[in-house]
Image 1: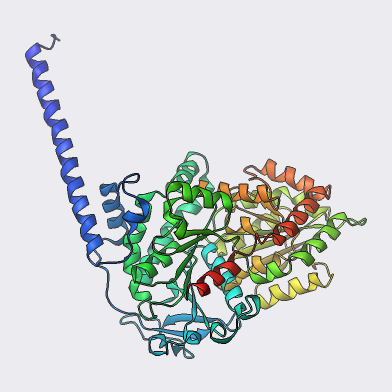
Image 2 (image 1 turned 90 degrees about the vertical axis):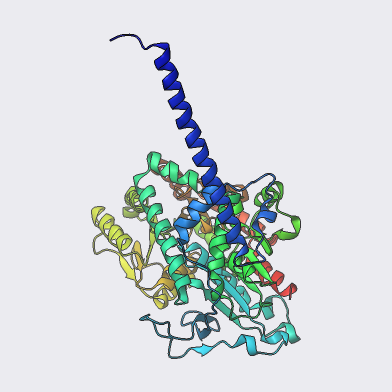
Length: 548
């Protein structure tokens, strides 16, 4: 084979230049198209949601192709609707005094019909008297976290008169639980598709582990300015779920999509409860008050460029019952830990709403078998409403010789009775109690209810990392959660993240064979409580009322 001549090389270089030039030209044209489309989306329909000004395009310029591509993946060619979804409400069957919203009229082509006891909201027609303005706790049932925080906020809202010493026109407000997924609508369908994809990926990556889990974790850290821009464009599609409410209604949002949709619809009193302990643009919202749980997160958001007028430090998002009983519950745990007669350590292990971590949690339960058989540990396993997790727990319990030797609680009433018996000084009937449900609410509420009588809450560092109960922080799902574990460890009410079963077992050895760590954690919780660390939801309600 002969050598390539100089003329041939020239032809090759020309061809390469043409290819590279064509690629550059195509990229330029695609970017220009994406940019034009992005600004057309911003102007039609017009909205007070100004993400670009909030993020600061000088330091965080839009990546137009990324925004265009992700938005197309999210909503396709769908156009934002100007319709109003008429709302009604019915009292919650689970929380006394709480009104739950849903669609008040049958949706064309839908099998869902309004509840028989539904009352049309009609808030737009009510007087301007402050007593008629409700508190709306807005959320989206994506996993358990956002719902858990919303119910925590509701617990304080329902008791605001007593806790905040309200009187006159400031008192007697109704509280509405506004779960966007509960409103039968195309908007809810859009959210469900997004949630299904996220939950599936969380389960798959957690169970596979390794490089796949690491890649998914890194994606959870990449909530940059473009992620907020994309979320804002998607949230515009959710405005019909708010348009039946007066624009001065206080909206307390426990999901950034809720806050984004409310601001884009023109609401003037929106309070966004920021999740996690990792500062990223994706979780804060322009045009509202963003509240964070910890000082490091607060500092990082300020450093990123969030205006101090848009962000405040509030404290942790914790249910009222847990906060009010901190002194008694911690003293009871200390007494159990330091008792001259050994008391089994009560370990509460919940499963998240996405149903991830099945493999790791089952391995952890299996590793506890020697302690269970020696009656040094009592297990409270909350499978939630996940059929696959209930089956997985049953399988591992049979494997360690406990088939048919554990109790099963499957109702909210049963959970309360179980907790109340332990508060009265009784012991569980069995060394292991499995909690499993057909409904969503008890799946979420059970962990809150049982936290009062658990010695240790063994959970991934999600929203539960902020709870006032000694915590064993097990393997995370998404790298953003590692910072919540750090918050718990620095406050002294939880461990550092235990990523391997051997790490979990070392902590269990400290919990079971000594009292020092449990005593220290409970003492820290008592002291943190005196400083208002766990008063976040109370402060959020006050902030919303102060802005009326």
